[in-house]
Length: 232
Image 1 (cartoon, rainbow, N blue to C red):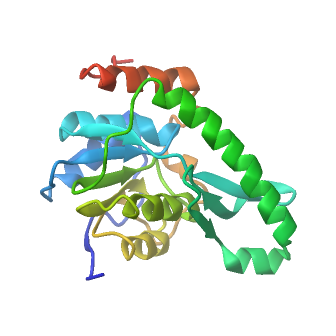
Image 2 (image 1 turned 180 degrees about the vertical axis):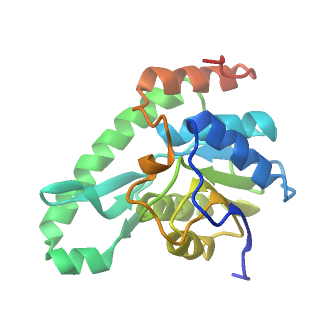
């Protein structure tokens, strides 16, 4: 792959009011590029709120992809990898080696997360059918990344559908992680990618509340109708 085209609005830390504001700023950053029949693909749940704002403002179709983090033994928040609904698996080999995670544990975690993914994907797809990616600019959006495991899996799964290009679009990411993920994409955009990253993604939001399935389904329903999500 050739060197990706990248665009970062702020090298310093930028705190967002909420995910909707992050989406609006991300859409602004994406306007530096032109896209071919764009489809904005959010990572539920929180990333779908950001993606919906981007899709509304570009404008573009909306879709979702469902990678799930594989949690470490005894520490489910620490990612040892990620898996998507189509079985694309990304493993953090350094973490696995450091923790001495067994192959048996990894396979159990993969099976467990795939069951969760399949159930939720079935529920969401009843509302919004898949928008084909082939030959289109696919803009992958989350509300932020830390290690980047789920986004790596999402990029791999997206490439399998032969899009015209893969666009990485993030409100916030550590600069090192953003640069690594950018190498997997054709275009990479971030609102802020600080070198000095403060802990988790939630530190960059005043409002980083949990997003429930009802909110996600309302967004999908609005885009299925060709409308916009209702303002909060």
